[in-house]
Amino acid sequence: MSYYIIDGHCDTVHRFISKAGNYDFTRYNEVGQIDLPRLRKGGVKLQFFALYVESEFIPDGALLRCIQLVDGYYATMDNVKGDMETICNVAQLHQTINSSKAGGLLSVEGGEALEGDLSVLRILFRLGVRSLGLTWNHQNQLAVGVGEGSKGNGLTSFGRAVVKEMNELGMLVDLAHINENGFYEAVALSSKPVIVSHANARAICDHPRNLTDNQLRMLKDNDGIVGLSFYPSFIHRESPSLDSLLDHFVHVAEIAGINHIGFGSDFDGIDEAVKELDDASFFHNLVEGLIGRGFTTEEMKKITSGNYLRILEQVLPAR
Ligand SMILES: [Zn+2]
Image 1: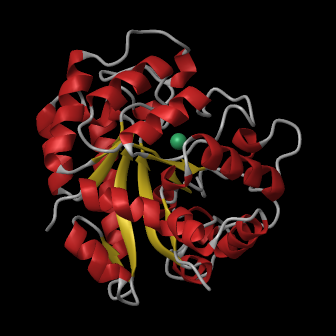
Image 2 (image 1 turned 135 degrees about the vertical axis):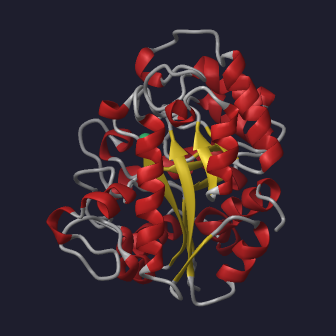
Image 3 (image 1 turned 180 degrees about the vertical axis):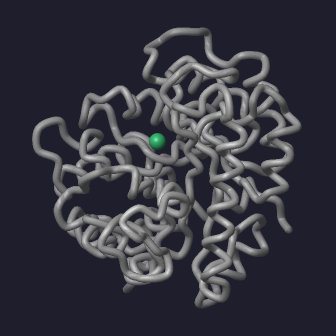
């Protein structure tokens, strides 16, 4: 049995822009953790591509920087036409999965890019953006990030308007990086399942970016998903390894249930990955490890792609 992969988070788009180390998405690179050959080798059928606006562009210039990243993404996808498809609706999603192509899904990481205006959200949607992380680690016009602790009362009125508009448009509400107050309010407010694209379990590794058991239970009630991340500091404080990452999967399955787990690698957002999970071509090691922990074929289908598929089918526009 082989499985195909949906990965809910990577930071590869910054390589599309900078081309540092002669990075080229179309070939196998010495630098970076994701390129087309490695997605193929890893069995990745759908890759979310985050558009992360660096702090030097915040607050002034956040939208322009976001547009540059969208432009860099499409310039790269033009070079792999026939091999990759940008996924904007459920029909395209199914078509791509049943073809030899891989899909890319555009996701903005941090609501700063909206510059406080819903029209920007709607235009980003028209540009193909299908997911938005409400915050990064700091406070913005929508809510407060985990980097600022329990500050604030949840979402601002603009933040609430954004969530409602995203539900209407057919965009994934991504709650990675938001603080707990914001998380609870956004989950309660969203009429659609939410995602936490890249985070792990706080009970296994006590890091503020990881989800508490209470948050995991809320995700279950919302029918949402957490994409477990390969970021070493979210896995284990002293000795992160593939094996300690597996502990997170087992715990989340226990608390949130098997229908609410996926992958959120954070490749190209991490300087050093754990051994045996070095880049996107190594997903088979994770799959083998999970099977070793006793997950059945049915459960493996859900973890590797089925859970993300279910949520995308519920949230994205039909066509
Ligand atoms: Zn992130």
